[in-house]
Structures are given as C-alpha cells and as structure tokens.
Image (cartoon, rainbow, N blue to C red; front, side, top):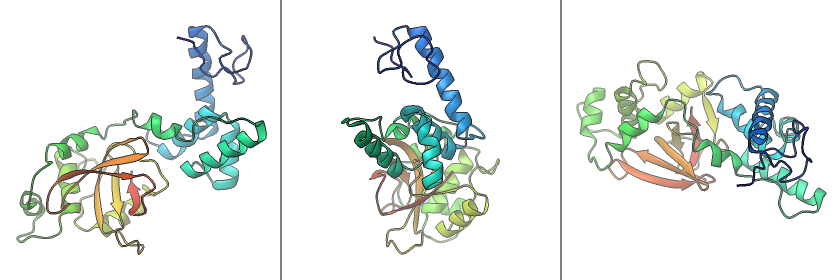
Length: 251
C-alpha cells in the first residue's frame, strides 16, 4: 500500500507536495484529518445532518479548498454539475487529462448514514406487498386510495420517525413536499441523496410532484429506491441521478 492521502495539501509539511508525495501511513492519516477538518470548517458545516455543506466539504477535500470558495462564489454551493465544470477547467489550466473525481461526493456519501437506516429496513421488509390495504387502512381510509405517500408514512411510523418529526405523516405527495419546504428540509434534484431520504417524482415534468418513495442507497451514479404503489406493489427501483423524473428530496 502506498499512502497518498492529501499529499498536495498545505498541511503536508514533511514530504514533497506532489501526488504520492507522502510515504508514511501515520503521517498521511494525520494530514488527511487536518485537511478534512479544514474543508468542513471552510464549508460551514453545521451538523452531521447538514449534507448540503458536507457535500461541498467533501468535494473540496478531493479537489482542494479552492473549490469551496469557487463553488460558493459562482454557484452558491456544491452540485454534481459544477464539480465537473471545475474539474474540466483545472484540466485545461494544468494541461492534464485527470483532475480529481467529479463524483467523489456520491462515492463517499453512500457509506455515510446518520440514523435513517431504520426506515429503509422497514421498507425493504415490505417489498412484494400488493394492494396497499394494510397501509391505507392504518392511515384511516376505508377505501382504496393512491398509497405511495401513505406507504412512506407507514414506514416512518414503524421506524419511530413520525414520533420525532423526522418524517411527516402525509397521504398526498404535495403535502409532503410542502412540509419539507416549510421546515427548510427540501433539496432540489441536484442534491445527492442519502440513505433514508424521501425522494419525490414528477412523472409529467410539469412542476408538480405525483409520486414518492424512500432512498435505499446511491451507487455508481444511480439512486436506488423502495416505493409503495408502484404498479400497486411495494417495489425496489433505480434511476439515474440525472433522471428528469426526479423532482426533489426531503431530508
């Protein structure tokens, strides 16, 4: 193993600041921790759940702190799209074929969980359930209704997330969207979701959400979901993160 972590950052004061410059594992880890802490501070991360600023910090960790100020100045923060723009600009400037990893945030966040795993485990246990009667009767309906939002609410209740207001109880997708927006917990489709986030869809692409599910994971540029009322069944599905059908996320 060749320790290369953060060799080129300003905290490396012992080895050449070039790729693969650090040759001591312990020192590599020490420098990497200092660099990550600096990125988290520069990105003004408020908490472990502040994934918007954590994403900015992670991409800065990969590219260098200069990305953080650049992204804030030109775009107001991190997006997958501007991460690629920055990489392309730096490749042209440095006349190199590679500059960092524009998908670094997605690669890291698929391993980063902050307590939303329970809702995913509950949802996974329901895969294959049909008709949705156990969910809409639990909600209080005496006849069948569209039940994708109700399924999310049922899973939240079973995992204890209704009790602490982590997820709202809602039967209409628009009510869920409005709750997340009112509570400043809404992210648009450029956001890279985390396990347990709530994903909203706009099949007609008319600016109105009409379906909702639960994020299971993000991997290789795709978001994997568990959705109720998908052809009247609980199903596992996947979409490209750039899918036009994705409307936004509740976090």
